[in-house]
Length: 271
Figure 1 (cartoon, helix red, strand yellow):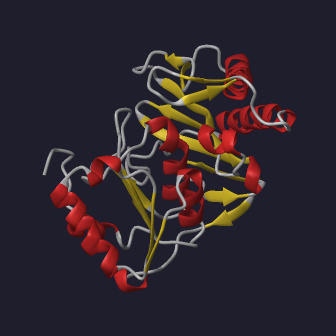
Figure 2 (figure 1 turned 60 degrees about the vertical axis):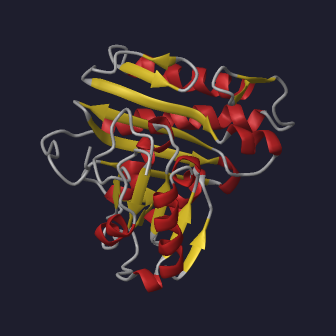
Figure 3 (figure 1 turned 45 degrees about the vertical axis):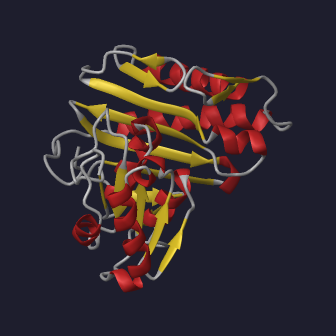
């Protein structure tokens, strides 16, 4: 799922991007109406929370996509997966960061991405609490609030800022955790912005790398397109391309990627 190789150079995804942006705007209106915060909070089988806002935002997104592209498959956070082998597959997380939303912190977003023939080709990431929307289309560059963005030029770890998100799986592996500890001592600074936030910062050059060992592809699909179109690189921790089953992420300004991989060897197994 590398955005910089095997491009569909003869394919124009502009119409699909317009759909994604309208779908995200529809979800944003749902969230804006929830000024008093979520009311009906319940815990799903996977022990994560869901609110009526998640569900209403998802319905709004799906409605826009289904009206424009009724033959396309959809995989969304609450509705579940359609035909994952479909030529066109939309990946949707209507409210990524539900816990932040419930607690009244601004670290939540709406994520919409499109996969064409197994490749991520566009992504839109809207963060209402920060009044910012990042978007990208394969081959078209990346944008934040409609201004072009690009990753940093940082070339050495001693000058790099690394942000982390969920690290439970990494922390449970002693050798990987020790490797991570050494990496922390080698970078200029460590941060923990999490969720959409550190990927937006990476794509606009405000930090240099992001590491997470516990994610869902719906959380990061749109962000992968944005980071790569901004000039960065986004893979699994083992260096393999992101896929529908990906559970961990290493993202960087590209210049640091191979160095980070060497500092943190990872095969996802007990170490």
